[in-house]
Image 1 (cartoon, chains in turn green, yellow):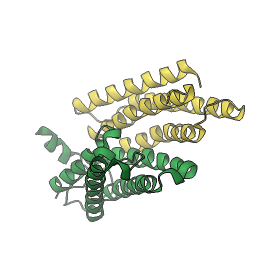
Image 2 (cartoon, rainbow over the protein chains, first blue to last red):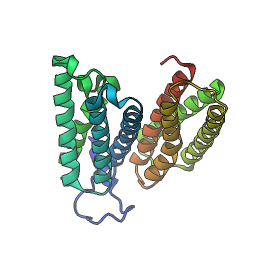
Image 3 (cartoon, rainbow over the protein chains, first blue to last red):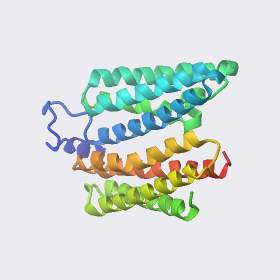
Image 4 (spheres, one colour):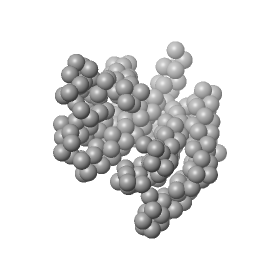
Length: 145
Length: 120
């Protein structure tokens, strides 16, 4: 509970954020979210780049999906950092839809995804962080309205 | 790739992560100690990257060279970005950013060791 109080206190003028009235989504705990999304963009993006460069023919769909997921993480991190709520919410929605759809697909029909993506098995290859991240993001965005 | 250096970097990163978490729990902003520790970590990661590149140039190294280089680049980039991003936040959430980086580095260095030894 006191996290909320301190979270609001985090919006001290440090950055020259345009809207002083609305609670900043890229400040306080939002900073941590941006850091986590950034690291995921880096990790998933680098992995997808290597896979696409070296063995694209093995599983083009899976590798393209990984690259797409990395791109959405990047958009999400930048949108939060730059206080673009709409874009951040859309990106969270895409992440959530992606992890749910691909996760379900990979369980129902494993043949469809021979190679793991970030979203396979609801992100089980990444300790389910891909499933938790968009929920966390949406929760954070809704609390800072 | 040198085992002791990698191990030392993993331990240092974990210590930084734990101290950062403690700082967040105590509701304090970033201090200079954390920044200096991050600087030392970055220096060590740069040395490791230099040694790795030298070894790769000599033709040593695993089959998964591209993946290894990807991780190496990641480890060098993360601490300065985290420091920049954490210092900008003058609240308990600044050190929390450092904690995220502190937990990411051991994972990445650990994966690099695995790749180097060919166990994964």
